Length: 189
Image 1 (cartoon, rainbow, N blue to C red):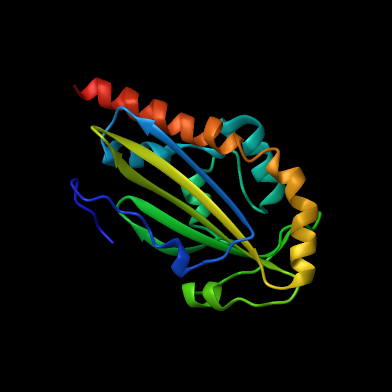
Image 2: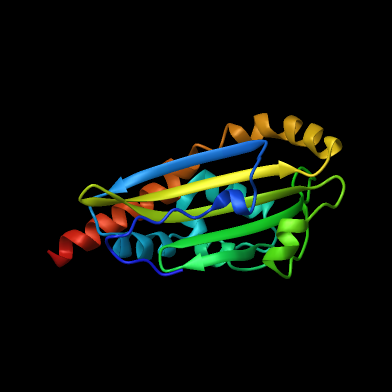
């Protein structure tokens, strides 16, 4: 879906994962226009975000330090569910608590929506830009939903460990994107 500069777009996350057990939401405002902020967000490399980048490379098979987060979210084991000029929704399904996560190779957004393999979760990653007065905001939301009670127990066991690091999203990739966008915006003025 394309947006115009005057339109506030918020992706319909409930369409894909309406009742998550875990939900994280972060946003960072930038003294920038939305297009510049979205480009900057797409340029942040996994290895630039310190501890979060190391955790991502440890937990997501096949990721590399020089890869951007956008490249990661648009490559297996992630599936692009929806994408537009200023938003990206990606899904992931599997056993995220395993020492070496067992993640499905999804083929379509419908497969993500209908995923019900016992002992697994569905994870929705969403990122978009929104107007924030005269500036723009970069928004990141992650939703996790277990498909059965066994997966819910495993998620409850895992979340205290993962939850301690989730604030790194705001201080890492989002902050880097905001700084880049503001620098680029200031150079063009």
